Image (cartoon, rainbow, N blue to C red; front, side, top):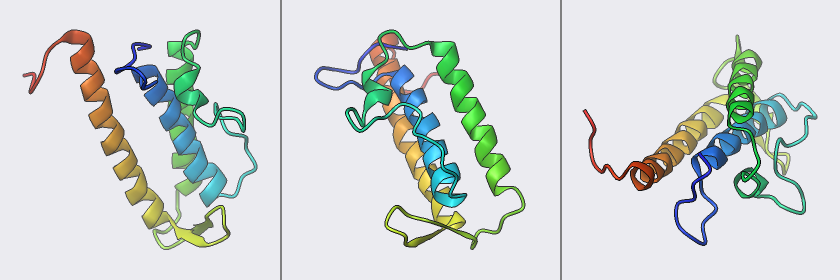
Length: 129
C-alpha cells in the first residue's frame, strides 16, 4: 500500500485512500454542510501530506477513516435534494448535484491511478478475469 508509482511522484495506494477520505470530508462536511471540521491530513506546511506522509501511516486506520468519512457524507446528504446548495471557498453556491458529479470524476480518476499502481506492484497488465 505504501509502494510509490515512480519517482518523483509520491502517489501510492495508501496515499489514495487517505486522499479520498479527505476529499469526502472536504466536499460533504466542509463545503456542503458548512461544518467547521479540520482537514484530515493536509496542513498549510504540507498540503499533500495525505500522499507524502505514508511511510509510518497505518493502512487499517486509513481504511477505517475513509469508510467513516463516506458514512458521514451519506448522513450529510440524506434527504437532501440535488439542487440544494453548499458554498465553495470563495462563497459561491455549489449544488449537491455538482458535488456528486465531481466525486464520480474524482473516484474515476483515482481508480485509474490505483490500477496503474496495481500493475506496477503485481506485474499484471490489462483485464484480469
